Amino acid sequence: MAEKYNDLLQQLDMERLPRHIAIIMDGNGRWATRRCLPRSAGHKAGAEALRRATELCREIGVEALTVYAFSTENWRRSEEEVSFLMSLLIEYLQKEVALMNQQDIRLGFLGDMNGLPAEVRSALLQALQDTAENKHMTLNLAINYGGRDELCRAARRMAGDVQAGLLQPEKIDEAAFAAYLDTADCPDLDLLIRPSGELRLSNFLLFQCAYSELYFSDRMWPEFGKRDLLSAILDYQQRDRRFGRA
Ligand code: FPP
Image 1 (cartoon, rainbow, N blue to C red):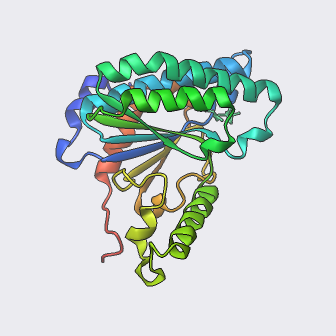
Image 2 (image 1 turned 90 degrees about the horizontal axis):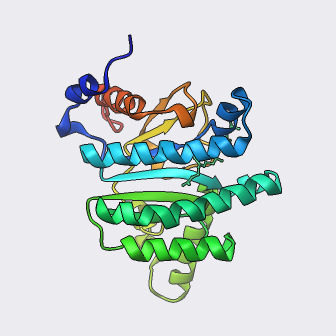
């Protein structure tokens, strides 16, 4: 029988919590199709799964949760699905702010904001502003995000700073580079979770994944519950992270 939530909670080593977790929220479409539901129902259920995951991270003291909500490649989906996802994002941002303020959660953003429809951009900017002072935890939404695109944007800004005399090329080391990434104000990524049985990074956090632990699950994202997230964290706590040491 699957272990109970509270039993799993008891097993957590609070001294070895991942500080930063990222999730590729995959499997919404398959979850819905298997239930003879439209894909949009899968995305709706995916948004609920995100609420649960955020709640658990906050409860146990994870500092940052970063989720892949819409990739630079997702524009290739049908107009209907893209438009549904954009409306869902707006609804989520508008509804969630009150709860995030109650729970002292700050919203963060990863991606290219310029490529977003004006209504999404304005809902996002409002939510970022409304939660900016919150301290307990950060929830980062990656929207119109691609890892390669992030690296290009960072390189472009760095080149601009070099040109303007603000940055010396010989001073560009890993830490200086990381400061130009969308995750500049986040702790290093400790754990990356991908549900739905796919074993790929799909252009997510390419620089940040260098030393993070990877956890794959066959569950679809909408059915990925707090117990699954706890199991992933417990699995992470069993790993021997050597960072290149013997
Ligand atoms: C991948 O599943 C999921 C997405 C492209 C969108 C993720 C969006 C959500 C979880 C909900 C909206 C998020 C917020 C923040 C409100 P898929 O559609 O590729 O699933 P499939 O591989 O089974 O087709």
